[in-house]
Image 1 (cartoon, helix red, strand yellow):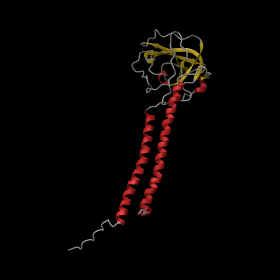
Image 2 (cartoon, one colour; image 1 turned 90 degrees about the horizontal axis):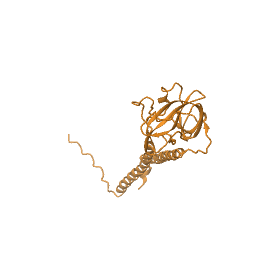
Image 3 (cartoon, helix red, strand yellow; image 1 turned 120 degrees about the horizontal axis):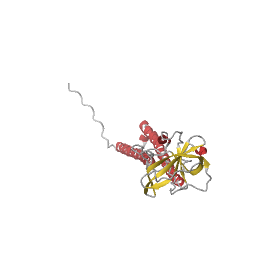
Amino acid sequence: MYRFLLTPRWWGINVFVALAIPLCLFMGSWQLSRFQDRAQDHEDAKQRTTVDTSAKARPLAGLLPVDRETSGERTTATGRYGKQLLVPDRTLDDKSGYYVLTLLRTDGGKSLPVVRGWLPGEADAAKAPAPPKGEVTVTGALQASESPSSDGVRTAGGLPTGQVGMISAASLVNLVPDDVYDAWVTLERGADGLRPVPAAAPEDSGLDIKAFQNLGYTGEWFVFAGFVVFMWFRLFRRERESARDAALGLVPEPEAPQPSTT
């Protein structure tokens, strides 16, 4: 009854199924591992938002360029404060306020954006305390440059003079005469009434839409594997019933062609 499984047609079907199922399972497992990696990155990022102040601060040069591993690391830099800017529309503990951002001109001649702290209310340069004079050494959490897609970030369009929408080298390069580091530091201790700004999780390291796409693809690949098995059993059952009917003589013989009358 099952001799049909030895026909070339069924050999082809069986080979296809034997290759398709492992492929679908492999791709589903790979997409699941991608989701798990992103979930782990999310957990690691949350941990890095709490800076271990007991850890030794590392020199800035040894942590650049900023990536997922170095974002949130404790760093130190020495220089002199220069131009000061305000970053409006920033929340802290669910309260609206603004960052006080001061450019630190380092010994290397480049300026490092330093968020000295946060103040509540509308951005007001008169309320922002002036930075210390002379050479200073700052210590804080290293952060990657922001992008327009970051939460709470807006472009500089329409902002008053002395304010900037996002903290990045691209937005600051035209506001200061020096080259700007493609990174910034948030101080771990506030002064002069400024509240310290906690480190932010690095971008593209959370459970974003890409992570859930990986989870969706996982389900799709496993569904494909199940569909292949389902179709194989459906074809097998139909072929088995046809073979059984033929063995019992239930399959009608084809009619003989009628002679032509012309």
